[in-house]
Length: 254
Image 1 (spheres, helix red, strand yellow):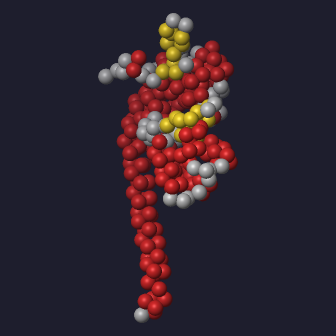
Image 2: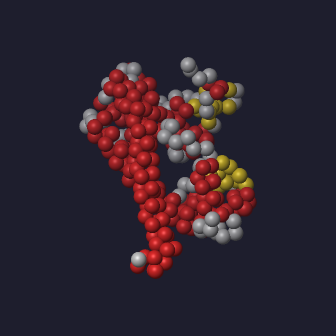
Image 3: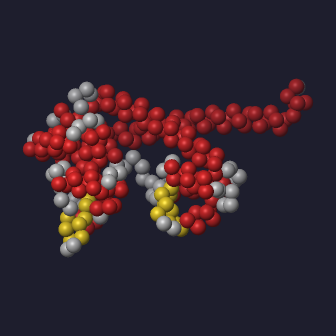
């Protein structure tokens, strides 16, 4: 069933540019060149949809791969005449959406400082922003994940310094990126193949989209299963060390 336009996410121009990671002037330029459809008008207000966001991300991806704006315009024109642009945008949505169900949380800066406690420093805050955990706008701060924030607070209450939590987060981000690269490489080589998306037919693009939807939960389950197995082994080893320490040298020598 088609979602009514009023119930779908919508963006003002500045919000769309921020969500897509582009400058507002670039968004205007793409519209002028016909790469981006016009927004929906409601009186003097112009509203953009997730479809605009999806196309902007696709434009950014193609630019990053060396395509010029003119080449992208020709590519979009060919896809649209061949009926493949909807499948291509569907693939982009499948690849970039729904990998997480994280809920962000926004609060006053003073409230965050209260939650983190007096040990948290301004440098900790700057680092959290740099790592992408926090976004500060005036006197408000948004944490990208309510679950991560809850985990952070739980660790702080048990005496773990914020700086070391951020160390762990930075390490985890790097390791997660490496795992993601490995999965994407496998998918790129064996599912998409050497032809590249621009040479796939509409039907082939749809096949790739279906494969992304099928493989998305598998990737998460594999990572979760391996992490659980590694944690079980590591915790067991740590408990053995602690038990030896508790038992004392006399019992160890028996």
